[in-house]
Image (cartoon, rainbow, N blue to C red; front, top):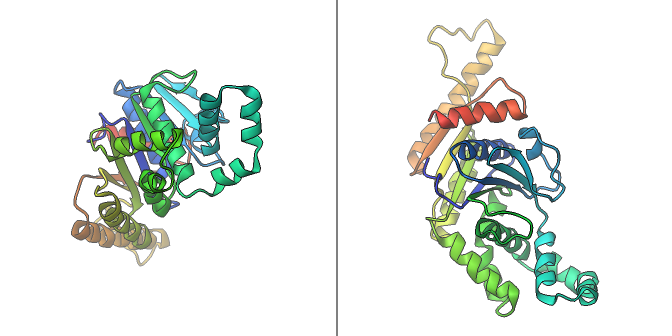
Length: 289
């Protein structure tokens, strides 16, 4: 894969395609290859820890394996930390953080939460997060497809709104970080089904139009195995389902052949439930690709 040297890998895709499982497996593979990796989750429901056989992060950075770490992050944590670093005095910090104006601003300013997430990623790879060592790679389990584009476009949006102060400085640094194909990469996860493939193709086009970039890797997850030549779908409903689902997969793979240019990775449907066993199985497939 072309992701091995990236400092930031953003994993996105339509909900339900196995995006978080792929992000966790990528973390396992890159950690085993010697990089110090943090898998960063921003969903408050926290699920990635279950895929890595770890307790919930609750906002902390947890080591879950050699070279592999996990954090569940809420964007407000990052913005509050910027205030603490700039103001210094506890009484003033408390007044600002409790201010309704500040709270409304952090909740409603376009792109600010996304900017905070990317800013945190940059601080992690620069070794500037208090109490945390420097990471070689952050794998960001990003929001679903449409929100993923908004996340990547956030530096441009925020720079149009905030032109001075610490947030403006952070925005300029993050914009340079995100726009560098040497430092950051994007992985799109899809199923070989009509709606996920349509969203993946649309995401690729949006990235080109809004960011002048294209995804680094397309992961086609949970592919049904090819049908045996002697499979008879007339007698067994399970065989009939297998034939039907594989036919659908092949149709959508052909559509991707027509509309997608770039590196692809195909992962099979595995008879393993969500959890560390699935993460290990996917990681093994990635390592063998």
